[in-house]
Image 1 (tube, helix red, strand yellow):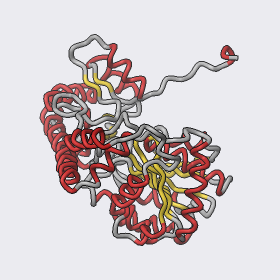
Image 2: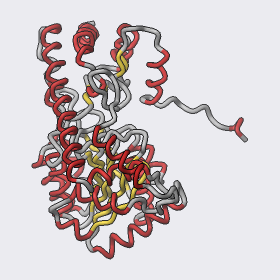
Image 3: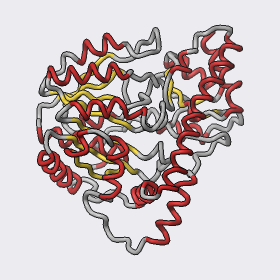
Length: 395
């Protein structure tokens, strides 16, 4: 049986982890895998998480299953974090999932059951896992134009032109903030325009918000989603605690359904639980317990929010310093767009050959489509990385 399996292709991002570890060069920089690192190059355990771990360890009394829906207090808290103050709070259901990828798959499966001929529209480009997850759920995929290679910003006119073609059998997937891979976000007026198109054409928005707090701030990053959920009958949401709580290995996320009525969302939740039963069955408990402990304690919540602001501000500073160094060594403003992008990622506009040159000549690891992880930079890396980018751009 196994001999009939085709040779699998390497994952273009995860394979970088192995290649980086095996690279013997002392001067090497990992800007590929999407994790936040501090000035020492470590992915830190947040103080709020450390304190929550102690609290959970001291109060936990069982290692029994937590149930198909996961931690229900966590589900409510994470929903409030995204939708508090909107009418959607009264007509929403959520289940805990193994990371946002688990949420994407569960909601993809839900779409397939609810409307088998659904087409999911993805931005071009989009998160590398969006298309394979949707296709694995049996859904059709189309793309809408999004990023302008010339301006390195969102081409709003072309984006809206494409999305206007979506109809009642379509779902339009949007990045809630900190677009992956480009770092270029839509503005609030565009969120309003897409909401109006949904009203007019009948498509359902699906918002993947994996980086809340890493863009403009915890509340600011949710404004577009909140407007949409407040003004539409149905919205699907996938969210993650990997970035803003630093819980990468705990795989903690949620699938959230906003419906026309609470009865609709309760029914949808029941179907999600049945779908979960046939896949992973129970989500892991520990990460959700930590998040719940933080959000259930005012002092821990304040500590977490302060740490999150520090991380967000550091990303802004890293972008500024990289742009300053690039202006100095490249003697141009060619890369000033990096400063306007949000969150962890930026697309340099480099070809695959140029990205390979960054790797081979300088030991700098980025994704072949030109994406680099700003959050992977140490401050001490910036002069070297800027020089390498400048030299590759000039060659």
